[in-house]
Amino acid sequence: MHMAPVVVARDLVKRYEDLTAVDRISFDINQGEIFGFLGPNGAGKSTAIRMIQCVSPVTSGKLEVLGMDVRERPREIKARLGVAPQDNNLDPDFNVIQNLTSYARYFGIPKAQAARRAEELLEFMQLSEKRDVMIENLSGGMKRRLIVARALINDPDLIILDEPTTGLDPQARHLIWERVRQLKREGRTIILTTHYMDEAEQLCDRLVIMERGKFLVEGEPKRLIADVVGDCVMEVIETDGDEAERYLRSLGQQVERSADRLYVYSKDCRTINQEFRRLHPEIYSVIRPATLEDVFLRLTGRRLKE
Amino acid sequence: MIMGIDRGAVAVWRRNADVFFKTWRTNFLPSVFEPLLYLVAMGLGFGGLVAGLTYAGQPIEYIRFLAPGLISISAMYGGFFECTYGSFVRMHYQKTFDAIVATPVSLEDVIVGEIMWGASKSFINSTIVLTVITLMGWFLFPAIQFTSLTILLVPPLTFMAGLMFASIAMIFTALVPNIDSFNYPFFLLITPMFLFGGTFFPISQLGAAEPLAYILPLTHTSLLIRDMSLGLLGPIDGLAMIYVIIMTIAATYLAVRMMKKRLTK
Image 1 (cartoon, rainbow over the protein chains, first blue to last red):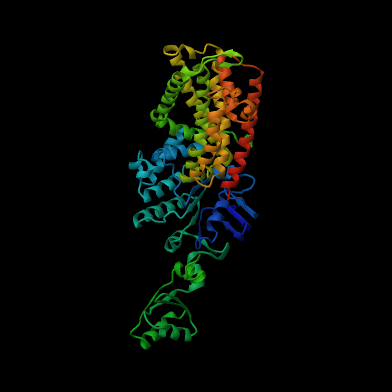
Image 2 (image 1 turned 180 degrees about the vertical axis):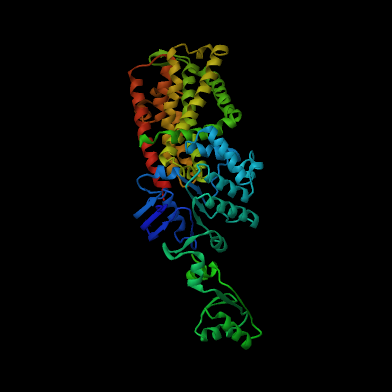
């Protein structure tokens, strides 16, 4: 059976007075997939997501979510959406369980059902022990978990996770990853933004990398790595001088420098490395598998933006 | 826009009510003691110096004139505080509005729900003040026994006046760059009303400036509450009511528009 895409965007534009935050992007997000928005700060990821969420008005272009136009039926769309925002906007006037039950009221969920669902979600996010704790007494990781739990209170079809693991320790990150995979297995569609490339590589079925409001690339993580970088990367540490850099460039290879580190992106990096080691045994070099991080940095550059 | 008042606005109202009633003991105390202090200090202490006061053509004891004024002041402060400082904290520091608009509840619902809650605070505070005055009238100061049945109209009126003050407050909340800026509306609007809005003395005392007092929302509120308390309702109270209704609708409309402008990005 053919399933209609959950999100359809065509030539989507968001323009502020002096800035085009989203510049004619087109994409489909399919039923049951995890779709990633990646990109440096200010690339337009959050703006794109806020439009999908129906809280930021579309300047022009088409945007349909769950088969409905965001301009015409925001209320119905929002009823089937679960959003875990980047900022902590949990309600500090309530404790953990009340945060879920009071939020359920905004969806018009009957009281008994909301109470049951809230307990289930605390269990799901391993927060049951913190049930009656006030928000200010939760750790950063617990707050993130509660925000994800809150996003699920209405049993949403589409879940938006905006940087769900920023600032978390590895255990907390892994718990969230595990839950995201579980939600996918339940057949839900998930939109994810993240700055962690390993996270995107692990979780996303497809992703886009944005810069200045446009998509630089779109595709499956493995395919993007193969297409943009190749299967391996040669890394060289050159603390003084630029001898190694000049040599590698003289081979006509794509070389990027970041402080004392050189990256060589080439299909032949194994042969290049062998030759390099013979010529410069005193300089440290290594071959490692290419990652999504290489794709990202190769496309958006190593220099700090802003 | 008015169609925005639905289940969503009620859910927003419920949120604020839940938070308030969690700590109701500390919330009620000031409302009980303040009017007590005012009645004793102004009504007894200061009122003893006032002779020959008349209101609506009849002689009246100062404390009897003052008591309805205190009810109207509490109606003004209840809604105005809630929808300036209270709403701003929820909007700006707690990001509560952001969290709510991610649900089917719209920004209009949030604003209307906040204004309804502000009006509820006016109602709660004023009703406490009214209760304190009634008890003191029975047991301490016979001069503030209000026997006219129209006094039963005071609680609903304080809710209506509350809507007006809360919606005016919400306009400032949509405007101010930071929380300290609320000093301006309090200094330029609330304090003048507190003093000149028919609260501590009849506005006829203002002489040539009397018509100016009719610009102030509190003047109409205190007029209505005093006439309801004293059983003196007349045509002028009808005009005051019209003022309250028009002001509420206009301010709510403006507040929603300005808030949307502030928060929609």
